[in-house]
Length: 160
Image 1: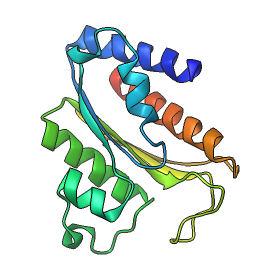
Image 2 (image 1 turned 90 degrees about the vertical axis):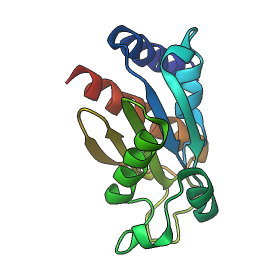
Image 3 (image 1 turned 120 degrees about the vertical axis):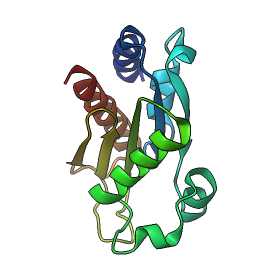
Image 4 (image 1 turned 45 degrees about the vertical axis):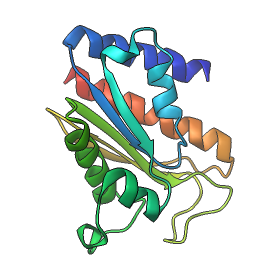
């Protein structure tokens, strides 16, 4: 967790410097992205909120994304990650939003993705989407890797 906290502190300081805000919609990272951003003193200056959108029910209740909006799209995909990030940004009125959706393990997900697969997105003045494949079945290690990759993606977007 120390690596994530250090990365969260870096991103948090950059957000404060810019006077920007962030919202988070994460799934398989289980709240670690938010935890890293919130471990920074003064996080209330930039962190507006977040949700662990782990199930279809959570997607509807937290993000208000109806089933129809997912037509032709599946969870744990780049289009879905971007939809989550854009929706979180809009719902919170944030400068930035970061999202993560994948399969932490030890097995894959019902869509055929192996453990260690995740898609990450940033929505804001710059948008970016990436897929990460760790090749690992270790759930905890994947959760940390997913969160670190999401924070790195946000950091790159902030510096773009």
